[in-house]
Image 1: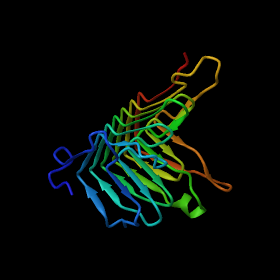
Image 2: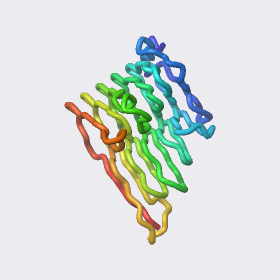
Image 3: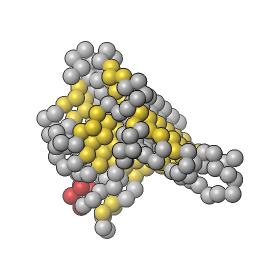
Amino acid sequence: IGTAGARKTIFNAEGKNRHFKFDNGEPSATKIIGVTFFNGNEKTNDWPGGGAIKITNSGTNLQFIDCVFDSNRVEGDYQGGAVTIADQAQPSFHGCEFINNWVNDTEYGTEGGAVFINTPSTADDLANTIVFKETKFIGNYAMGKQSSNGGAVRAGRNTIFENCLFVKNGAIGGNGQNSSTWENAEGGAIYSAGGWSNTGVKTVIVNSTFDSNYVEVRTN
């Protein structure tokens, strides 16, 4: 896919729906290379979200290489402006870009402006590490009326970020909330939390750059 490269191979969802749902055990030999996923908008009540792509179920381990996720979003009680990963799926991302993706919940809190990785269902699921290499996260945000976490990534399972770039991603909590409430925002770039039983999440960051990421709490 995308033999001309991501700048010329553009899947435009026109803000009508997400682009793809992968849930049939696509193996790591399945590679999506050089595609831009643009203007996806998940609004079919398919939790946990994923404005461009939802990836679920054991054995769904496909690779995204040199892909761009641009201006995708979810609104309402959902997560992952561009991508959600759940139910033992283990995709990988190499040389990708996540740009200007967002989540916005005007009633509750939200997580994962670009990528939402759901909490594990077993110890083995926790150990299914999601790997991002040479991937850029720029200008993504998670905004909610209540608390918000992970402007770029909400990691509920083990993750590795190697040679990655995080610039101007933000978590914004309390948007539209009155001044008498207590809200919070955590992880302008990455929010890593959760685990299984007594084993916590591990997030490994190697040779990566963080610049101008932020958290903000707003009230009326």
